[in-house]
Length: 144
Image (spheres, rainbow, N blue to C red):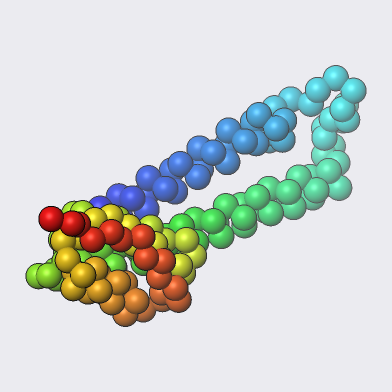
């Protein structure tokens, strides 16, 4: 449930960022033309097809980039969730003390563990997860 919620929040944030960026950069489709800019609708009411095609192509590119970013973010969130779920279900790993972050297929495991065996187990769980190509170890072993 948390993964779905995180995915939906990520999509919402990306959508808001996309709208804000297009508004602030002056490329918003809902704005009226500025002074000195050609209008897409002439006095005869005809639409300039070339301008409409250019704007359509621009919007299509932005949507494609946003969709790719959402896809990438969802894949990273899924990978992180898989690893954390493995750690939560494991009897030897204290998952609350371990943070997992994912960048593409590289996973960074950080936090404090109680023993060397817990350290090794946490890293093994991350490495054995499908889709992980590299694990960066930032775990520290607690000294008593």
